[in-house]
Each structure stands twice: as structure tokens, then as C-alpha cells.
Image (tube, rainbow over all chains, first blue to last red; front, side, top):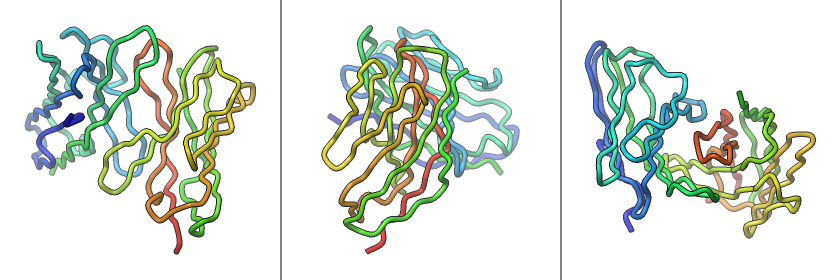
Length: 114
Length: 114
């Protein structure tokens, strides 16, 4: 089992550009959550996808959007990049259940905006 | 909104000694989950231990144990017989039972001295 995978590992963009980050969930998982982790801080919840729809969203502007595909993989898109968008972006997957479901995190994508 | 506070930005411990990391949280919910995650320099967020709020018994995983005080909204992590491999950033996290977002503290950097 490959666990949660993310691509790319690192990314450098300039202000105003757009970026797409990708996440493949752990086998058997159908729910994907995205987090932004600024340097020296804890992860902040961006949004969660389930059944190809955004189920919950944190306090992030509309410049942050996402998508989930039928195979449960997901993309995070950020438009009009700002310097403050520089961060580690973490993807976490879980299995939707009324009972406890552990979130497994990927290694993250380090985004640098110049 | 739920908040998680880790008041110790940095902690250090001698190898083989015991260290306790502190965490407090705020919520109006009665049922929820609490977690401690470890994030080494490799960035992969790893679950260390979890606690269900409805359980009075403190969770234990090998050398890791928690002191869960629900009324005080306190959730500390004790690491016994510290090892060099325990050096990492540790995050306390809260999650509602609806399997939505996790709310993280800003972390505690643990240094283990040989």
C-alpha cells in the first residue's frame, strides 16, 4: 500500500500565477482533505471532498478551489498566487464512516511564491 | 469555533528521560476526538496517539500516553524513555465526530539530547 501520495514535491511560482497540486488517497479511502501549513505553524484546514463534492470548507478565499475525481484522487487549485500562499500543502485521506476514521497524511507539496 | 493551544513552542529532553507536552483546547461539543501527531523534518505527519472524548481511560501506545482532562479541556502527551528518533515537531489536534476538519495547534518542537 503506497499510502497517500502527493505531487509535485516542490513547486516555485511567481505572484499572480496559478498552481495545481495533486493527491492520491490511500487505497480504500474515499474522502480527501487539504491543509495549508505555513512555516512554524500548524496545518489549517482548506476543504474536504467526498463523492466528488466539496463537503466542508475552512476560511480560505475562493482563489482556492478543488476537485475530486471518480477514482477519489483530488486536485487543489490556487489562482492569483500571493506571497502569503507560500506554504506546505498537505493532503489527508480517510474512509467515510459514521464511526471513527483515521486521517492519513501525505508528505506534502512545498509551494514557494516569489 | 474550536481552538487548540500548545503553549510550549520548544521542549528538550535527555535521551531515556520522560517529557510531557501540553495542549489545551476549546469546544462546546461533548463528543470529539483528540490526537497527537508527529512531524519529523521529512514532513510526513504521523499519528502518535488518539483519544475519544467519551472514554474516561487515558490512551496509551507503547512509550506514549496521554493525560486527558475533559472538564479542564486539557490533553497532554507523555513520552517515556525518550529516544533520538522522537525528535520532531508535535502537533495536538481536535476533530469533531462528524469526520470533518481537524483543528491543529501550532506545535511543539521536541529536541532529544544524547
